[in-house]
Length: 157
Ligand code: MHO
Image: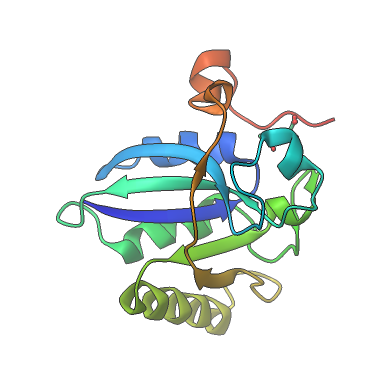
């Protein structure tokens, strides 16, 4: 099993999308990339802890490659809006790929460059590609949020 932590906006929808992908064996929502240890959702919402909302994916590399996971990642969000994903503003909603090793880093860089070159999006991709840090699992009520609440999109304010 391998791990891939990815940030693509409000983690409810990202988790729900990846749970439908074959080869993804588990998914947990949480926070990564900040300074505060053991942050709460309210801490992260202040946009002052530096964390991003992420989904920590467990996947079986025999069933799905890292590249295929990244394709899904780029398909399910807009990687061209800086610190914003649809209705949600703030650095915690940034588009970010946290890599665990040099191979993941190279794969992510390569895909970002290829998508930019191919003009896949009307604007330049702003996705960060940075080393993984501590994963802080989010509060239980955020896990499988859509399944619990029967909604399929992040509600807007
Ligand atoms: N716009 C969403 C953000 C939730 S997400 C877990 C809301 O309705 O609060 O950041």
